[in-house]
Image (cartoon, rainbow, N blue to C red):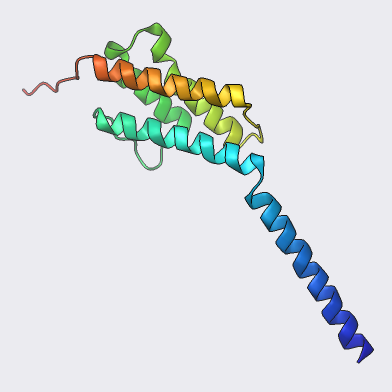
Length: 131
């Protein structure tokens, strides 16, 4: 009986530790920062799709950013042309590099996405030429 009680007690404590670790991770600032950069990157992808650039499913964030910079080259000035690469770099740093964005960096990214959106909205759309 004593062995069974010890076993059950250890299991309960282990379960409680796992549950508390899960809850702490679930509501941590790290997860909020990671999900915010994922939202920025997803909004960047949707923005590109609205303006005629669909990314392949196998493309990395950096490859997609370089494709966007090339695709929108004639519609963006030099300051907005680098925004896709900055978004991809931040995405990769948070997602794979174990980097946390500060509130200032998050606000800067939000402004850059807004600037890119505005620049694409104001620029004439690329037309496809038929031969």
